[in-house]
Image (cartoon, rainbow, N blue to C red; front, side, top):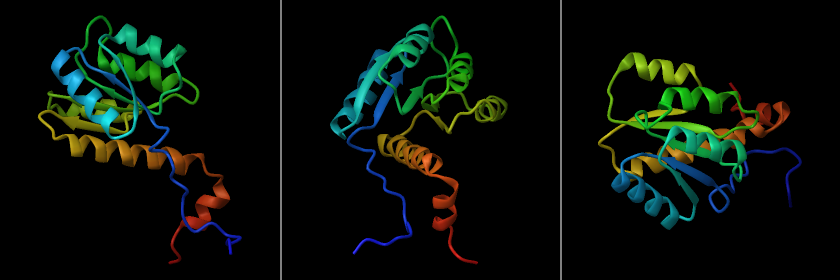
Length: 153
């Protein structure tokens, strides 16, 4: 029998989740694209900031963008800022080799979900993607469903 009150989120995102990988290094781009495709995600790629913005503006509606900070023509923070302005745009996870607290802080302020430092392992990146997708599903829930999900104090 189905309960009248929701007790947990219905997270059925994995089979339909769409990821855009934005990376100018061909080996890293291929590694991320192949890994996430093998995990059952739909994966598209871009090598420049312009390609990334084109894909997120006119593309199939991505859920998550894995974005390198240093990419040709338009930098990662500028791409992040533009994506953050999009209505119902994708969530962004920055994946970079730059360990700079100020830039990480700025990225989170601009709307990045996470800031992952290279070198990383693929499971770590996937964990962040899964958390990001769960957060997107949670935010889509109506306020009363979110209240019902909070544990009693």
